Image (cartoon, helix red, strand yellow):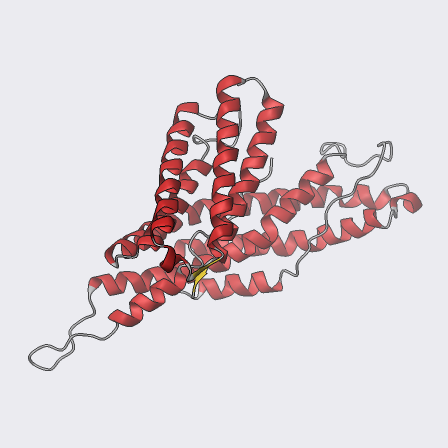
Length: 324
């Protein structure tokens, strides 16, 4: 099953922090004429800005490569026995997917992230991710060209057999590094998201608060009752998250309807709202299938994949909207 793409949930809102910080950056002057320290809230905003900047380097890598390499591995193992490797007796050699982007920008970004002095616990898993990517990319490209050009017809799969073990090791190492980096990022993302929600509330930013709250509830919904397997989804937990997401979506759409003049300055809002509704429909379909046909594992896997696609679409369109 495909993984969630990790479109960072607060990219488009980053500039809101910049505006807030600029507004609060002038230190107060005491009676003695000495500048007082900046308010604690301002320091927290500045720290959140740095966290967003650091997280986004990793997110750019994950969005660009993690799904691509995972799909390539899935494609390869759809026709190759991992224990045996290619034999030449398969009905067809489907090969694998190429790595579509140059990894240089990711590697440069991870290096830049390591130099940002916040959340240094991300440095080690970030470096492991970069190393795994550097190893996997050339192997995948080599294997892709070999199968895409059907060179196995000329050497009786000799090269395919030679690179099989190294290719699987590279896939496994990358998957491990990807999983660890995501796990380390998640609590930091949650802290930043909650901090941003509080900033919107304190600033009286009704739409910013409503939309950020919806993103948080979508994240709770994407937890799928604590599981990524249809068999182990906790139906009750999923239903609670679904109800909260639906209520929060109604709150956001109601705010937009009651503040039409303000919403004229929010570009691409309608696309985001449409994607939010599609996510709701997909989540309801998944919940109903789990409730009414819990033994339909094939249908459940398809429903989860559809849900992931809708979730990724909603997060992508959320990152695309901006205020004029």
